Structure formats: C-alpha cells, structure tokens
Image (cartoon, rainbow, N blue to C red; front, side, top):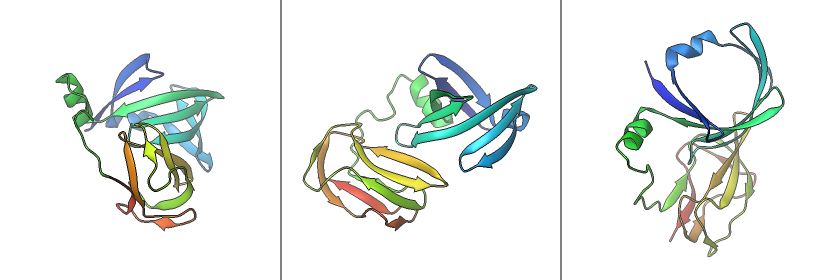
Length: 160
C-alpha cells in the first residue's frame, strides 16, 4: 500500500492511500479527459499539464483548473525532516522520464537560465509535459531537436 500527500492550489492538503483509488470510477472520454464518478458525484477531468521535476500537475475538474502537487513516501519523509527535496542538489543534466516526442525547445546552447525557467515540452501519453530548469546555470548542450522521439532516460539537456 502506497501513500501520497496531495496539495491543491497550495491551500488544501490531504493524504491518499493507493487503495483509495479503487473508489474512483473513471472512464476515458478522449485523450487526457476522463469522466469520474466518486461518491455518486460526476466529474469531468482533464490533465492539462504536468511538471515531473516539481511533481506539479494542472488538472481541470468540471471546467475549473487546479494546480496539484503530489508527493510520494520519500518526499513526505524528507519534508517531515525539514529538508527541501532539491536543497543542495546540483543537477547537471535533464533526462526524459518517459518515452515521448519533443514538441518545443525554449533554450539554446550557451544560454543563461534561471531555476524554473521553461526549457522544453515533451508530449507523452497524449499529455504535454513542461520541463523547467532545475537550477540556475548555463546550457552546455541540447541533445534533442523538435520532432525527435525520445526514450525513457535519454539525455535531453546538459548544464555546464
């Protein structure tokens, strides 16, 4: 059984067990859209965007968009200990977390970027995933081009 901490709009927090997901009755309507029935309440949902680096997702529920942050057990443990998950972390490369297609590249080799600055968009599982810079730095190389199909773990961008 897995536990997740979910925060909606940085205001409403709750914990959910993987078993709780069995209470949701979801039917896919079209790419990324679902009809969800929970406690006899109908919802039309859509994942608009996701940021795997920050574990943030923008989800539309009945035409209202919400920013949702999901933490797993390790993230919760680190937060409970008072540490930041990315404190002191020096990320030198950005890799694809899943197979997909590069839709857009916002950065250029030699460009100075700030933390959380948009770098590229990867389409995967019919969702557009925005990747932002994990730190301040300079782009050393870009290993992909718009239109490239990438594999999980493939190098996307390298930092100096």
